[in-house]
Length: 217
Ligand code: B12
Image 1 (tube, helix red, strand yellow):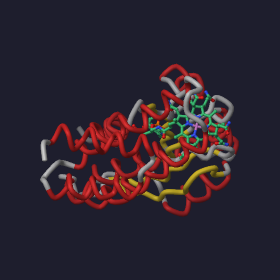
Image 2 (cartoon, helix red, strand yellow; image 1 turned 60 degrees about the vertical axis):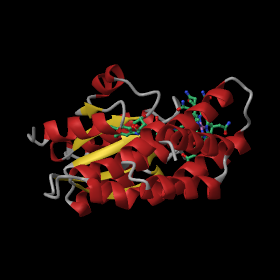
Image 3 (cartoon, helix red, strand yellow; image 1 turned 90 degrees about the horizontal axis):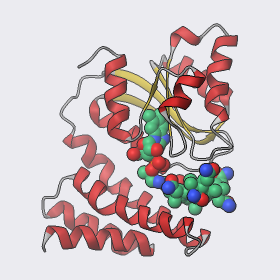
Image 4 (cartoon, protein in one colour; image 1 turned 180 degrees about the vertical axis):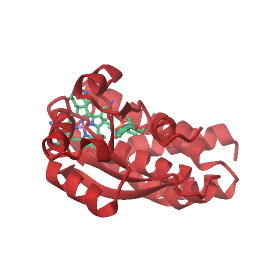
């Protein structure tokens, strides 16, 4: 099948929340030789963005959005091992604990960032969504992590990113971990304001900044 058409169909299937159809189209795209990042960026992401756009415009309702996002997550599960296999670098560049901050259940972007970082050669401990501040820190200590990556998708939960940094300072641990922040409402300005070590607008940017902070070019 024509690549463009296949990617459009993948986007439409995510948008409509057709999980089985999406999974089977993604498998088909893989078997037809499409790269995982192509399937992600030009198929799945436009689909969830379309659903999100209509949600923002009040034309799409929460249950529909949930079905679209569950559909996207299922497809990412199919892609994740392939993304890892396609990764060029196998050397461990650094260790990362990643999660979405407390009170925030959005986990698609965070999972994607974790997957792409892992593809790039970082070792990941994914703590999931709605992660308490103390858990970020305890897990980072136990994992001997280089990074604490905190995602926030709500303006009301961004404050959790600041709290992670404040708590690290209070416990005398600030120098032990590099803190990266991201999520749709997060910006460079916010990252600077709270004293984070880095910000990534998307998963690829997260890799760039993480590599830079590890001194890898
Ligand atoms: C899908 C979605 C949902 C799904 C989430 C499913 C899931 N398992 O994640 C569901 C339907 C459950 C949901 C629920 C809610 N949602 Co919602 N949701 C979205 C939506 C449409 C897309 C988010 C998404 O997955 N995008 C795709 C991913 C790939 O992008 P991303 O998350 O931005 O991640 C990328 C970057 O930000 C970055 N990144 C992300 N994290 C990190 C971390 C680091 C360290 C780095 C470096 C980079 C990085 O890299 C990622 C990959 O490129 C957004 C709209 C939007 N435009 O963002 C609204 C949105 C975030 N939701 C919103 C709201 C209000 C809610 C609810 C409160 C709704 C409600 N009334 O109940 C609840 C939240 C409840 C809670 N306590 O958390 C608002 C937030 C408004 C605000 N400014 O606070 C938004 C913006 C929609 C809107 N405009 O109204 N939502």
